[in-house]
Amino acid sequence: MPRQLLAFDLGAESGRAILGQFDDNRLELRQLHRFATGATAVLGRLYWDVLRFFDEIQTGLSAAAADGGDLGSVGIDTWGVDYGLLDADGALLDNPRNYRDPRTEGVMERGLARVQRQQIFAATGLQFMPINTLWQLLSMRETESPQLTAAQQLLMIPDLLHYFLTGERACEFTNATTTQFYDPRQRRWSTELFDAFDLPPRILPDIIQPGTRLGAIRPEVAANCGLPRIPVVVPATHDTGSAVAAIPAHGGDFAYISSGTWSLMGAELQEPNVSDAALRYNFTNEGGVGGTYRFLKNIMGLWLVQETRRTWQSQGRDRSYAELTEAARQAPAFGALIDPDDGRFMPPGDMAARVQEFCLETGQSPPQSEGAMIRCILESLALKYRWVLERLEEVLGRRLEPIHIVGGGIQNKLLCQLTADAAGRQVVAGPAEATAAGNLLVQALGLGWLDSVEDIREVVRTSFAPRCYDPAHDGERWEQAYRRFCRFLPGEIPD
Image (cartoon, rainbow, N blue to C red; front, side, top):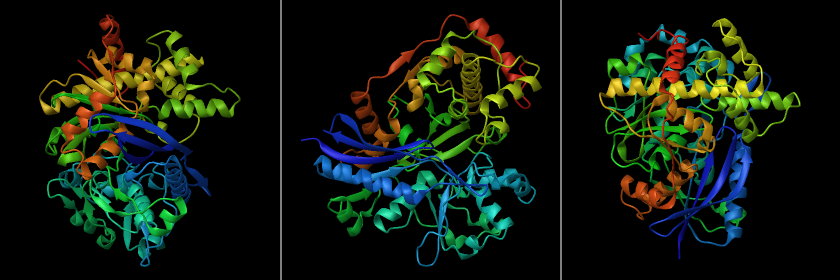
């Protein structure tokens, strides 16, 4: 009989309970429960409702109990950078803030006036983004937050949810590396950086590796959900860490894009790269499974489409993603372009208006129709992928091919084809459920059912058929578009 595992995969829009049935060779996935996870705005602040998330997790556990199979373990992954603070009694001091909360505006710039960028990068190897945990904590220090004063421990979001499940506190490695105060070369928290910013080292928890058995679900949770006290085995709790573990690649000379609300594009390394070139291009070193590092850049991703669609829905123009993608397919190619990572696109709001504003500021005719707007976003993303690929190859000194794309974004077949066209490389798309598959298979690794990351990838290759996209024969038009696109990037004008 196949052995069963349960993954909870929480993203910026939704969370799912995914049951995995594993027969030592193949993995089959089945969704048991789905729920919304979006941010909650209160009094000008943006929160994650983690108590509701935990209630939804218990609903997913109850669904697994009703399904009738024996579970080998359960594990949770989410996004990175966000956290909760616990007091001396282990109680949550406040609902965690969403990384798009405005409290970090200007904090990173003020922080870099105190500690040099080069010093921070040498200590952490992490890209500079105002959403990073370091700057969120520094915003609390600047406002003399009583919560920071009272805090005795910090837990990242998946670690917090694992704590609610088990009562055990620890920070899993892949999420620890998203904070910008983990030292990847010393393999420990950078307490020196905490001291430099007058942050309290007492809040830093122990770090554990993906695949660690954290404990068992608490008796009251088990009784409430109709389950025995099943083990909790932590996956790569950063969703991209789980997704990259499940890339069906052979060898190491491939690039990847984990495509969803964010696009995370990079390569897999055995050691962190903290070179001057990595700092210059603002690459990051985030932890992976098996002691690897994800050398990558964050790109704004399909958030741009999601927010555009949400705005249009609020205006009574309700379109499915499939309808918007088809409209984009029919729209003329190579119209207006944007830099997807322009700062104006970070907060929630009227994204279509911001795209038009960017176009006007850069002397372009703004897209007017729905199809033209989405085409503008998708072509711009594809061109940004090419730009990042070129920088990756420059820093690493080798060619990366193919480009593996995993995650829900592969359902946008137009974006996959545009990526192949823009980069001039074959794209291998799949699986869409890479994060859930990686979560489940790292649990299997922790239980001793698999022995290595290569074993995980062999199971993925056996279980999920990818779709390949080859570049179209219009390279000259893409070259012209790329030259025009690069002029909209800060400090990047091609020869």
